[in-house]
Image (cartoon, rainbow over all chains, first blue to last red; front, side, top):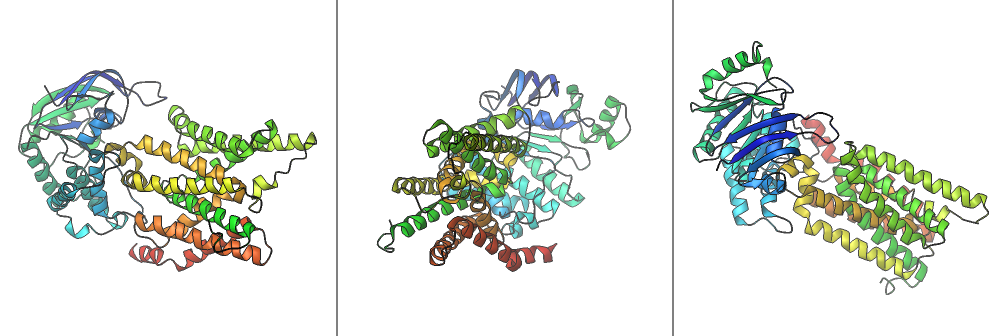
Length: 248
Length: 276
Protein backbone atom coordinates (compact mmCIF):
# COMPACT_ATOMS: atom_id res chain seq x y z
CA UNK A 1 0.00 0.00 0.00
CA UNK A 2 1.35 3.46 -0.95
CA UNK A 3 1.86 5.97 1.86
CA UNK A 4 -0.20 8.53 -0.09
CA UNK A 5 -3.08 7.42 -2.31
CA UNK A 6 -5.34 9.98 -3.94
CA UNK A 7 -8.10 8.74 -6.23
CA UNK A 8 -10.08 11.24 -8.31
CA UNK A 9 -10.13 13.88 -5.58
CA UNK A 10 -11.84 17.25 -5.87
CA UNK A 11 -11.22 20.03 -3.39
CA UNK A 12 -12.83 23.42 -3.02
CA UNK A 13 -12.45 26.22 -0.53
CA UNK A 14 -15.54 26.85 1.58
CA UNK A 15 -17.82 29.15 -0.39
CA UNK A 16 -15.78 28.76 -3.60
CA UNK A 17 -17.86 28.21 -6.73
CA UNK A 18 -15.33 26.02 -8.58
CA UNK A 19 -13.08 23.22 -7.35
CA UNK A 20 -9.42 24.21 -7.05
CA UNK A 21 -8.36 20.62 -7.66
CA UNK A 22 -10.35 18.38 -9.97
CA UNK A 23 -10.24 14.67 -10.67
CA UNK A 24 -6.70 14.33 -9.36
CA UNK A 25 -5.08 10.95 -8.68
CA UNK A 26 -1.61 10.42 -7.25
CA UNK A 27 0.39 7.70 -5.51
CA UNK A 28 3.50 8.33 -3.46
CA UNK A 29 5.67 5.53 -2.08
CA UNK A 30 7.91 5.55 0.99
CA UNK A 31 11.34 7.03 0.28
CA UNK A 32 10.27 8.96 -2.83
CA UNK A 33 11.45 12.49 -3.55
CA UNK A 34 8.47 14.21 -5.16
CA UNK A 35 8.82 17.63 -6.80
CA UNK A 36 5.58 19.44 -7.64
CA UNK A 37 5.87 22.11 -10.30
CA UNK A 38 3.59 24.12 -12.57
CA UNK A 39 2.39 27.66 -13.21
CA UNK A 40 0.85 30.03 -10.67
CA UNK A 41 -2.62 29.03 -9.45
CA UNK A 42 -2.06 25.46 -10.67
CA UNK A 43 -3.26 24.15 -7.27
CA UNK A 44 0.14 23.00 -5.93
CA UNK A 45 -0.30 24.39 -2.41
CA UNK A 46 -3.91 23.21 -2.36
CA UNK A 47 -2.70 19.71 -3.25
CA UNK A 48 -0.37 19.67 -0.22
CA UNK A 49 -3.16 21.00 2.03
CA UNK A 50 -5.59 18.40 0.68
CA UNK A 51 -3.13 15.64 1.52
CA UNK A 52 -2.98 16.68 5.20
CA UNK A 53 -6.66 17.61 5.38
CA UNK A 54 -6.25 21.35 5.90
CA UNK A 55 -8.37 21.87 2.78
CA UNK A 56 -11.55 19.81 2.58
CA UNK A 57 -11.74 17.08 -0.05
CA UNK A 58 -15.25 17.20 -1.47
CA UNK A 59 -15.16 14.10 -3.69
CA UNK A 60 -12.88 11.12 -4.18
CA UNK A 61 -10.78 8.95 -1.91
CA UNK A 62 -7.63 10.08 -0.09
CA UNK A 63 -5.55 7.82 2.14
CA UNK A 64 -2.39 9.01 3.89
CA UNK A 65 -0.39 6.74 6.23
CA UNK A 66 -3.28 4.28 5.92
CA UNK A 67 -5.81 6.84 7.22
CA UNK A 68 -8.81 8.28 5.41
CA UNK A 69 -7.98 12.02 5.24
CA UNK A 70 -11.65 13.04 5.11
CA UNK A 71 -12.37 11.29 8.41
CA UNK A 72 -9.08 11.55 10.28
CA UNK A 73 -7.64 14.94 9.29
CA UNK A 74 -6.06 15.84 12.69
CA UNK A 75 -4.58 12.32 12.98
CA UNK A 76 -3.04 12.64 9.49
CA UNK A 77 -1.60 16.06 10.40
CA UNK A 78 0.00 14.60 13.54
CA UNK A 79 1.92 12.18 11.32
CA UNK A 80 2.82 14.47 8.41
CA UNK A 81 5.14 17.46 8.37
CA UNK A 82 4.12 20.58 6.46
CA UNK A 83 6.30 23.68 6.08
CA UNK A 84 3.94 26.42 4.97
CA UNK A 85 4.77 29.15 2.47
CA UNK A 86 5.20 32.87 3.20
CA UNK A 87 5.06 33.06 6.95
CA UNK A 88 6.40 35.99 8.92
CA UNK A 89 6.45 36.65 12.63
CA UNK A 90 6.41 40.09 14.22
CA UNK A 91 9.33 41.07 16.49
CA UNK A 92 7.05 40.93 19.54
CA UNK A 93 6.16 37.24 19.03
CA UNK A 94 6.78 35.90 22.55
CA UNK A 95 8.19 32.48 21.59
CA UNK A 96 11.79 31.33 21.32
CA UNK A 97 12.99 29.21 18.40
CA UNK A 98 13.24 26.20 20.74
CA UNK A 99 9.62 26.63 21.89
CA UNK A 100 8.49 26.81 18.26
CA UNK A 101 10.38 23.59 17.44
CA UNK A 102 8.73 21.90 20.45
CA UNK A 103 5.29 22.93 19.14
CA UNK A 104 5.84 20.47 16.30
CA UNK A 105 5.46 17.68 18.90
CA UNK A 106 2.23 19.01 20.44
CA UNK A 107 -0.15 17.32 18.00
CA UNK A 108 1.45 13.92 18.62
CA UNK A 109 1.30 14.45 22.38
CA UNK A 110 -2.47 14.92 22.34
CA UNK A 111 -4.63 16.98 24.67
CA UNK A 112 -3.84 17.38 28.38
CA UNK A 113 -0.38 15.81 28.26
CA UNK A 114 2.97 17.46 28.86
CA UNK A 115 6.19 17.02 26.85
CA UNK A 116 8.36 14.16 28.10
CA UNK A 117 12.08 13.43 27.85
CA UNK A 118 11.63 11.79 24.44
CA UNK A 119 10.01 15.01 23.16
CA UNK A 120 12.87 17.18 24.43
CA UNK A 121 15.33 14.73 22.85
CA UNK A 122 13.53 14.94 19.48
CA UNK A 123 13.62 18.75 19.67
CA UNK A 124 17.34 18.73 20.50
CA UNK A 125 18.04 16.37 17.58
CA UNK A 126 16.09 18.55 15.12
CA UNK A 127 17.83 21.72 16.30
CA UNK A 128 21.22 20.07 16.01
CA UNK A 129 20.40 18.61 12.55
CA UNK A 130 19.54 22.09 11.26
CA UNK A 131 22.56 23.63 13.01
CA UNK A 132 20.51 26.28 14.79
CA UNK A 133 21.69 25.68 18.36
CA UNK A 134 22.82 29.31 18.65
CA UNK A 135 19.31 30.55 17.77
CA UNK A 136 17.34 28.31 20.08
CA UNK A 137 16.94 30.85 22.90
CA UNK A 138 16.23 33.83 20.64
CA UNK A 139 12.65 34.94 20.04
CA UNK A 140 11.55 33.87 16.58
CA UNK A 141 10.41 37.32 15.48
CA UNK A 142 13.92 38.70 15.85
CA UNK A 143 15.44 36.12 13.45
CA UNK A 144 16.04 36.69 9.74
CA UNK A 145 13.71 35.14 7.14
CA UNK A 146 16.18 32.34 6.40
CA UNK A 147 16.67 31.56 10.09
CA UNK A 148 12.90 31.48 10.62
CA UNK A 149 12.65 29.08 7.68
CA UNK A 150 15.19 26.76 9.30
CA UNK A 151 13.29 26.90 12.60
CA UNK A 152 10.07 25.95 10.83
CA UNK A 153 11.78 23.03 9.11
CA UNK A 154 13.19 21.92 12.50
CA UNK A 155 9.63 22.26 13.92
CA UNK A 156 8.48 19.70 11.36
CA UNK A 157 11.50 17.41 11.68
CA UNK A 158 11.03 17.30 15.48
CA UNK A 159 7.59 15.87 14.77
CA UNK A 160 9.31 12.78 13.28
CA UNK A 161 6.86 12.78 10.36
CA UNK A 162 6.04 9.83 8.16
CA UNK A 163 5.62 12.22 5.20
CA UNK A 164 7.34 15.59 4.82
CA UNK A 165 5.68 18.29 2.70
CA UNK A 166 7.37 21.59 1.94
CA UNK A 167 5.88 24.57 0.14
CA UNK A 168 8.69 26.56 -1.49
CA UNK A 169 11.07 25.89 1.38
CA UNK A 170 14.03 27.68 -0.21
CA UNK A 171 12.38 31.02 -0.86
CA UNK A 172 14.31 32.82 1.92
CA UNK A 173 17.55 30.88 1.73
CA UNK A 174 20.93 31.47 0.14
CA UNK A 175 22.64 28.81 -1.97
CA UNK A 176 24.71 27.34 0.89
CA UNK A 177 21.63 26.94 3.08
CA UNK A 178 19.74 25.35 0.17
CA UNK A 179 22.48 22.80 -0.39
CA UNK A 180 22.62 22.04 3.31
CA UNK A 181 18.85 21.50 3.51
CA UNK A 182 18.84 19.37 0.38
CA UNK A 183 21.31 17.06 2.15
CA UNK A 184 18.96 16.91 5.15
CA UNK A 185 16.00 16.04 2.91
CA UNK A 186 18.03 13.43 1.02
CA UNK A 187 18.87 11.79 4.35
CA UNK A 188 15.16 11.73 5.24
CA UNK A 189 14.34 10.11 1.90
CA UNK A 190 17.03 7.48 2.49
CA UNK A 191 15.38 6.74 5.83
CA UNK A 192 12.12 6.07 3.98
CA UNK A 193 10.34 9.39 4.64
CA UNK A 194 8.90 10.67 1.35
CA UNK A 195 9.47 14.35 0.56
CA UNK A 196 6.82 16.31 -1.36
CA UNK A 197 8.16 19.68 -2.35
CA UNK A 198 6.52 22.54 -4.21
CA UNK A 199 9.43 24.46 -5.72
CA UNK A 200 10.13 27.26 -8.16
CA UNK A 201 13.88 26.70 -8.37
CA UNK A 202 15.25 23.27 -9.09
CA UNK A 203 18.98 23.77 -8.65
CA UNK A 204 20.73 21.84 -5.90
CA UNK A 205 18.26 18.94 -5.91
CA UNK A 206 19.86 15.67 -4.80
CA UNK A 207 21.27 13.27 -7.36
CA UNK A 208 18.55 10.64 -6.90
CA UNK A 209 15.52 9.72 -9.06
CA UNK A 210 12.86 12.41 -8.74
CA UNK A 211 9.13 11.74 -8.92
CA UNK A 212 8.01 14.83 -10.86
CA UNK A 213 4.41 15.98 -10.72
CA UNK A 214 3.48 18.84 -13.04
CA UNK A 215 0.17 20.58 -12.35
CA UNK A 216 -1.91 23.01 -14.34
CA UNK A 217 -5.41 24.34 -13.57
CA UNK A 218 -6.00 21.94 -10.70
CA UNK A 219 -5.03 18.80 -12.62
CA UNK A 220 -1.89 16.72 -12.95
CA UNK A 221 -0.58 17.05 -16.49
CA UNK A 222 2.57 14.93 -16.00
CA UNK A 223 3.45 12.30 -13.42
CA UNK A 224 6.83 10.73 -14.20
CA UNK A 225 10.23 9.77 -12.87
CA UNK A 226 13.27 11.80 -13.96
CA UNK A 227 16.60 13.20 -12.86
CA UNK A 228 16.95 16.60 -11.16
CA UNK A 229 18.63 18.14 -14.20
CA UNK A 230 15.66 17.33 -16.46
CA UNK A 231 12.92 18.95 -14.36
CA UNK A 232 13.08 22.48 -15.72
CA UNK A 233 13.07 21.31 -19.32
CA UNK A 234 10.08 19.00 -18.73
CA UNK A 235 8.04 21.76 -17.05
CA UNK A 236 8.97 24.20 -19.79
CA UNK A 237 7.75 21.78 -22.48
CA UNK A 238 4.68 20.84 -20.52
CA UNK A 239 3.45 24.36 -19.95
CA UNK A 240 4.77 25.92 -23.13
CA UNK A 241 6.28 28.94 -21.41
CA UNK A 242 9.93 29.90 -21.05
CA UNK A 243 11.87 30.00 -17.80
CA UNK A 244 11.17 29.68 -14.11
CA UNK A 245 8.28 32.10 -14.11
CA UNK A 246 6.19 29.00 -14.61
CA UNK A 247 6.08 28.18 -10.96
CA UNK A 248 5.19 29.94 -7.79
CA UNK B 1 -14.04 35.52 51.54
CA UNK B 2 -12.17 38.65 52.57
CA UNK B 3 -14.40 39.46 55.54
CA UNK B 4 -11.53 38.66 57.90
CA UNK B 5 -9.64 41.57 56.32
CA UNK B 6 -12.39 44.11 55.57
CA UNK B 7 -15.19 44.86 58.02
CA UNK B 8 -17.44 46.74 55.62
CA UNK B 9 -19.49 44.16 53.68
CA UNK B 10 -20.13 46.43 50.69
CA UNK B 11 -16.44 47.23 50.24
CA UNK B 12 -15.54 43.59 50.79
CA UNK B 13 -17.98 42.36 48.12
CA UNK B 14 -16.91 45.06 45.68
CA UNK B 15 -13.25 44.18 46.11
CA UNK B 16 -13.83 40.43 45.76
CA UNK B 17 -15.95 40.91 42.66
CA UNK B 18 -13.49 43.27 41.05
CA UNK B 19 -10.55 40.96 41.76
CA UNK B 20 -12.26 37.86 40.33
CA UNK B 21 -13.57 39.70 37.26
CA UNK B 22 -10.29 41.40 36.48
CA UNK B 23 -8.15 38.28 36.98
CA UNK B 24 -10.45 36.12 34.80
CA UNK B 25 -10.69 38.74 32.05
CA UNK B 26 -6.97 39.54 32.06
CA UNK B 27 -5.97 35.87 31.68
CA UNK B 28 -8.36 35.43 28.75
CA UNK B 29 -7.24 38.81 27.41
CA UNK B 30 -3.67 37.51 26.98
CA UNK B 31 -4.94 34.84 24.57
CA UNK B 32 -7.37 37.11 22.76
CA UNK B 33 -4.90 39.95 22.23
CA UNK B 34 -2.16 37.65 20.93
CA UNK B 35 -4.62 36.03 18.50
CA UNK B 36 -5.54 39.53 17.23
CA UNK B 37 -9.13 38.86 18.23
CA UNK B 38 -9.68 41.84 20.50
CA UNK B 39 -13.06 42.31 18.88
CA UNK B 40 -14.18 39.11 20.68
CA UNK B 41 -14.02 41.19 23.85
CA UNK B 42 -16.29 43.99 22.76
CA UNK B 43 -18.63 41.68 20.85
CA UNK B 44 -19.11 39.47 23.89
CA UNK B 45 -19.58 42.42 26.21
CA UNK B 46 -22.28 43.86 23.99
CA UNK B 47 -23.87 40.44 23.52
CA UNK B 48 -24.09 40.15 27.31
CA UNK B 49 -25.50 43.67 27.41
CA UNK B 50 -28.14 42.78 24.80
CA UNK B 51 -28.93 39.54 26.64
CA UNK B 52 -29.49 41.41 29.89
CA UNK B 53 -31.78 43.87 28.09
CA UNK B 54 -33.76 40.96 26.60
CA UNK B 55 -34.01 39.41 30.07
CA UNK B 56 -35.37 42.63 31.51
CA UNK B 57 -37.78 43.03 28.61
CA UNK B 58 -39.13 39.52 29.15
CA UNK B 59 -39.22 39.95 32.93
CA UNK B 60 -36.63 37.22 33.40
CA UNK B 61 -33.36 37.21 35.31
CA UNK B 62 -31.07 39.67 33.49
CA UNK B 63 -27.86 37.85 34.32
CA UNK B 64 -29.11 34.43 33.20
CA UNK B 65 -30.32 36.02 29.96
CA UNK B 66 -26.95 37.74 29.53
CA UNK B 67 -25.14 34.41 29.91
CA UNK B 68 -27.52 32.65 27.51
CA UNK B 69 -27.28 35.36 24.83
CA UNK B 70 -23.51 35.70 24.96
CA UNK B 71 -23.16 31.89 24.84
CA UNK B 72 -25.40 31.94 21.76
CA UNK B 73 -23.20 34.56 20.12
CA UNK B 74 -20.09 32.52 21.05
CA UNK B 75 -21.66 29.51 19.34
CA UNK B 76 -22.31 31.61 16.22
CA UNK B 77 -18.87 33.19 15.79
CA UNK B 78 -16.96 30.09 14.65
CA UNK B 79 -19.51 28.52 12.28
CA UNK B 80 -20.54 31.86 10.75
CA UNK B 81 -16.89 32.73 10.03
CA UNK B 82 -16.32 29.32 8.44
CA UNK B 83 -19.53 29.17 6.39
CA UNK B 84 -19.36 32.76 5.22
CA UNK B 85 -15.62 32.37 4.56
CA UNK B 86 -14.99 35.61 6.41
CA UNK B 87 -12.31 36.63 8.86
CA UNK B 88 -13.51 36.10 12.44
CA UNK B 89 -13.12 39.86 13.02
CA UNK B 90 -15.66 40.64 10.27
CA UNK B 91 -18.18 38.21 11.78
CA UNK B 92 -17.57 39.73 15.20
CA UNK B 93 -18.21 43.19 13.79
CA UNK B 94 -21.63 42.13 12.47
CA UNK B 95 -22.57 40.33 15.70
CA UNK B 96 -21.40 43.33 17.74
CA UNK B 97 -23.64 45.71 15.77
CA UNK B 98 -26.57 43.31 16.02
CA UNK B 99 -26.15 42.98 19.81
CA UNK B 100 -25.87 46.71 20.32
CA UNK B 101 -28.94 47.34 18.13
CA UNK B 102 -31.01 44.77 20.07
CA UNK B 103 -29.95 46.28 23.41
CA UNK B 104 -30.60 49.91 22.44
CA UNK B 105 -33.90 49.02 20.74
CA UNK B 106 -35.24 47.20 23.81
CA UNK B 107 -34.03 49.76 26.33
CA UNK B 108 -35.48 52.63 24.28
CA UNK B 109 -38.73 50.73 23.80
CA UNK B 110 -39.07 49.99 27.52
CA UNK B 111 -38.31 53.63 28.40
CA UNK B 112 -40.89 54.79 25.83
CA UNK B 113 -43.48 52.40 27.29
CA UNK B 114 -42.73 53.77 30.74
CA UNK B 115 -41.14 50.57 32.00
CA UNK B 116 -38.99 52.60 34.36
CA UNK B 117 -35.89 50.77 33.22
CA UNK B 118 -32.51 52.11 34.16
CA UNK B 119 -29.82 50.83 31.86
CA UNK B 120 -27.00 52.56 33.69
CA UNK B 121 -26.09 49.50 35.77
CA UNK B 122 -25.80 47.44 32.58
CA UNK B 123 -23.72 50.09 30.87
CA UNK B 124 -21.45 51.16 33.71
CA UNK B 125 -21.80 48.37 36.29
CA UNK B 126 -23.08 48.46 39.84
CA UNK B 127 -20.50 47.04 42.15
CA UNK B 128 -22.30 48.22 45.31
CA UNK B 129 -25.38 46.01 45.12
CA UNK B 130 -23.93 42.60 44.42
CA UNK B 131 -25.34 39.36 45.79
CA UNK B 132 -23.06 36.79 47.39
CA UNK B 133 -24.08 34.24 44.72
CA UNK B 134 -22.79 36.57 42.00
CA UNK B 135 -19.40 36.72 43.71
CA UNK B 136 -19.28 32.93 44.02
CA UNK B 137 -20.11 32.64 40.30
CA UNK B 138 -17.30 35.05 39.48
CA UNK B 139 -14.89 33.10 41.70
CA UNK B 140 -15.89 29.93 39.83
CA UNK B 141 -15.38 31.48 36.39
CA UNK B 142 -12.03 32.89 37.53
CA UNK B 143 -10.93 29.37 38.56
CA UNK B 144 -12.30 28.03 35.25
CA UNK B 145 -10.17 30.50 33.27
CA UNK B 146 -7.04 29.54 35.23
CA UNK B 147 -7.79 25.81 34.81
CA UNK B 148 -8.42 26.28 31.08
CA UNK B 149 -4.99 27.87 30.60
CA UNK B 150 -3.25 25.25 32.79
CA UNK B 151 -4.95 22.29 31.10
CA UNK B 152 -4.56 23.49 27.50
CA UNK B 153 -1.36 25.50 27.92
CA UNK B 154 0.56 23.85 25.08
CA UNK B 155 -2.39 24.03 22.65
CA UNK B 156 -3.10 27.65 23.62
CA UNK B 157 0.53 28.69 23.18
CA UNK B 158 0.70 27.02 19.74
CA UNK B 159 -2.54 28.72 18.65
CA UNK B 160 -1.25 32.06 19.97
CA UNK B 161 1.90 31.54 17.90
CA UNK B 162 0.10 30.81 14.61
CA UNK B 163 -3.29 29.18 14.12
CA UNK B 164 -2.48 27.59 10.75
CA UNK B 165 0.85 26.16 11.90
CA UNK B 166 -0.86 24.82 15.04
CA UNK B 167 -3.52 23.14 12.89
CA UNK B 168 -0.87 21.69 10.56
CA UNK B 169 0.88 20.25 13.64
CA UNK B 170 -2.27 18.21 14.34
CA UNK B 171 -3.50 20.29 17.28
CA UNK B 172 -7.28 20.36 17.77
CA UNK B 173 -7.44 24.09 17.16
CA UNK B 174 -11.20 24.27 16.73
CA UNK B 175 -11.95 22.56 20.02
CA UNK B 176 -9.66 24.87 22.01
CA UNK B 177 -10.97 27.93 20.12
CA UNK B 178 -14.61 27.08 20.92
CA UNK B 179 -13.83 26.43 24.60
CA UNK B 180 -12.09 29.83 24.67
CA UNK B 181 -15.14 31.54 23.17
CA UNK B 182 -17.48 29.97 25.73
CA UNK B 183 -15.29 30.86 28.70
CA UNK B 184 -14.96 34.44 27.44
CA UNK B 185 -18.74 34.63 27.03
CA UNK B 186 -19.28 33.32 30.56
CA UNK B 187 -16.70 35.62 32.13
CA UNK B 188 -18.01 38.67 30.34
CA UNK B 189 -21.66 37.93 31.14
CA UNK B 190 -20.89 37.43 34.83
CA UNK B 191 -18.73 40.55 34.99
CA UNK B 192 -21.43 42.70 33.40
CA UNK B 193 -22.91 43.74 36.76
CA UNK B 194 -19.52 44.81 38.05
CA UNK B 195 -17.97 46.93 35.35
CA UNK B 196 -20.82 47.16 32.85
CA UNK B 197 -21.02 46.41 29.15
CA UNK B 198 -19.06 49.47 28.07
CA UNK B 199 -16.08 49.10 30.38
CA UNK B 200 -15.49 45.37 30.48
CA UNK B 201 -13.43 45.54 27.31
CA UNK B 202 -10.77 47.41 29.31
CA UNK B 203 -10.36 44.42 31.62
CA UNK B 204 -9.88 42.14 28.62
CA UNK B 205 -7.43 44.30 26.73
CA UNK B 206 -5.45 46.58 29.08
CA UNK B 207 -3.71 44.08 31.44
CA UNK B 208 -2.64 41.89 28.48
CA UNK B 209 -1.36 44.92 26.58
CA UNK B 210 0.57 46.10 29.65
CA UNK B 211 2.13 42.65 30.11
CA UNK B 212 3.09 42.45 26.43
CA UNK B 213 5.21 45.61 26.86
CA UNK B 214 7.55 43.81 29.25
CA UNK B 215 7.30 40.06 28.73
CA UNK B 216 9.45 38.10 26.30
CA UNK B 217 7.53 34.85 26.76
CA UNK B 218 3.93 33.76 27.10
CA UNK B 219 4.29 32.20 30.53
CA UNK B 220 5.34 35.51 32.06
CA UNK B 221 2.46 37.27 30.27
CA UNK B 222 -0.01 34.87 31.90
CA UNK B 223 1.50 35.79 35.29
CA UNK B 224 2.02 39.53 34.86
CA UNK B 225 -1.37 40.38 33.26
CA UNK B 226 -3.54 39.07 36.15
CA UNK B 227 -1.06 40.47 38.67
CA UNK B 228 -1.42 43.96 37.16
CA UNK B 229 -5.21 43.53 37.05
CA UNK B 230 -5.24 42.44 40.69
CA UNK B 231 -3.12 45.34 41.96
CA UNK B 232 -4.91 48.01 39.91
CA UNK B 233 -8.38 46.67 40.82
CA UNK B 234 -7.54 46.54 44.52
CA UNK B 235 -6.14 50.05 44.47
CA UNK B 236 -9.09 51.26 42.39
CA UNK B 237 -11.70 49.83 44.78
CA UNK B 238 -9.87 51.28 47.79
CA UNK B 239 -9.53 54.73 46.18
CA UNK B 240 -13.15 54.73 44.99
CA UNK B 241 -14.52 54.06 48.48
CA UNK B 242 -12.00 56.34 50.16
CA UNK B 243 -12.80 59.34 47.94
CA UNK B 244 -16.43 58.45 47.00
CA UNK B 245 -15.78 57.87 43.31
CA UNK B 246 -17.47 55.44 40.87
CA UNK B 247 -15.58 52.13 41.13
CA UNK B 248 -15.66 50.65 37.61
CA UNK B 249 -14.82 53.82 35.65
CA UNK B 250 -12.01 54.55 38.10
CA UNK B 251 -10.51 51.07 37.63
CA UNK B 252 -10.87 51.46 33.85
CA UNK B 253 -9.12 54.83 33.95
CA UNK B 254 -6.34 53.49 36.16
CA UNK B 255 -5.75 50.56 33.81
CA UNK B 256 -5.57 52.80 30.74
CA UNK B 257 -3.21 55.12 32.66
CA UNK B 258 -0.94 52.20 33.59
CA UNK B 259 -1.04 51.07 29.95
CA UNK B 260 0.12 54.52 28.79
CA UNK B 261 2.92 54.44 31.35
CA UNK B 262 3.95 50.93 30.31
CA UNK B 263 4.31 52.01 26.67
CA UNK B 264 6.63 54.82 27.76
CA UNK B 265 8.65 52.58 30.07
CA UNK B 266 8.72 49.43 27.91
CA UNK B 267 12.31 48.17 27.67
CA UNK B 268 11.12 45.41 25.32
CA UNK B 269 9.92 47.99 22.81
CA UNK B 270 13.26 49.80 23.10
CA UNK B 271 15.23 46.58 22.51
CA UNK B 272 13.15 45.69 19.44
CA UNK B 273 13.45 49.20 18.01
CA UNK B 274 17.23 49.11 18.46
CA UNK B 275 17.42 45.68 16.80
CA UNK B 276 15.41 46.75 13.79
